[in-house]
Length: 201
Image (cartoon, rainbow, N blue to C red; front, top):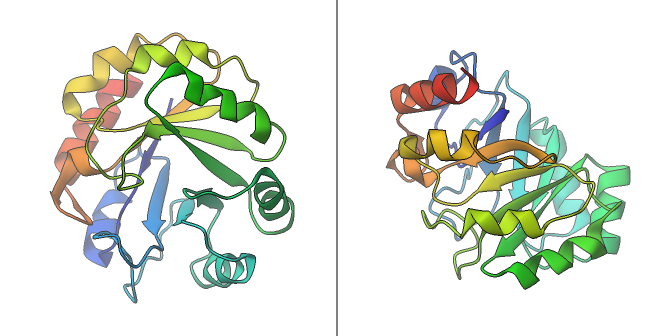
């Protein structure tokens, strides 16, 4: 089970996160309206990093991928399957976010099969992530595709056992964010350490 910590924006906090061996990935948000927007902060990390974009152009994505040495591109907007596939094939592996509130939402995954490397299932809200709200995780049984996925949406330290009991062959990892924050963009490293150790034990 992989652990991705998203919405990191401050260098000292990032450096502390790098010392947690159970954390596999870090995420930076390149959306100016987000309270976790990385802006001009130094987001360099020894961890493989995700760049989160919402309806950005390929040129904008490519520029940030090079500047921040991103390993993955997370598309959190209305990007088409064709755009996702082009980005996946020519820039970096793509994680396509599917916003979920009901079982019918998983039908959208069929359009993106073969167009991305991973899916990320997050709670459908107006905020496009970072809402701290869960969707009904039992709904992921509706997903029958072959693309591995990350589970996201309101995950906190209290969810370890629930996540460990999810039995889905394509569950690849979890994406944590607001449930571990001191304030937007700054994470509680000790809580993340506890969560990641318990999840992987």
